[in-house]
Length: 259
Image (cartoon, rainbow, N blue to C red; front, side):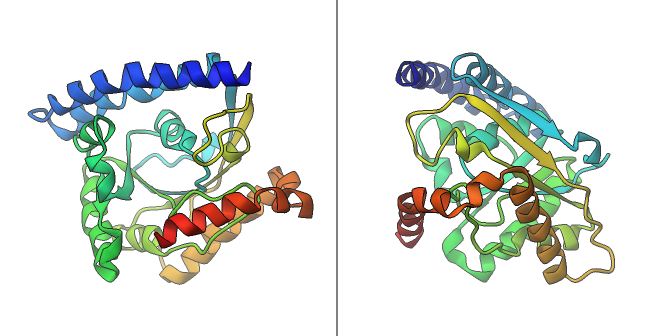
């Protein structure tokens, strides 16, 4: 049954995504907010199939913590699920993403029309400058900015070094940081064809005020809240047995990063 559900979902994506991408390319004459509204209507549509076809539900804790104005979201990154779900949970937003994603047929073409922050990760310190320059522009346009501080998808129960780009942007733009924890990787694993039914819990933390606090300290506070919340809500991912089970997934992620 899980294989059949996952197979049908893959077919749905193959049918739905190309027309949306082509239509997205045709929206280039419209203002950024209009393009964003049109193209990102793809996300709630796909999320409907995620729920009704894959059997993956979600529950949000701390929705009252969402600030009134644009902010920088620092989120745990475990799967493709959160790239869709965050668009439904939060106000209009954009992502910091790898520039090469824009070259992916159909998906990347449509993505290129959504106001976002496309960076060259090989640019080193210049990549950080790209995040700040483009990120401040997006925030001024009224978009929230999502940053995955670990830089890549991580297996449940594990963590990687939190990079400073997201907090650096929030500090320079003078907007709050909103930390987010979730367990999407428990049901939708990295690069996995099979998706398991269940309930994903998304926890939104209290916004972190950037005023009067150094960037490094802001990064430490965000990491402490996210990783602490992960252990509070999902302690079963942090047992020795659970960590041993995701060993191959961790090695695969490391190899991909090195490549």
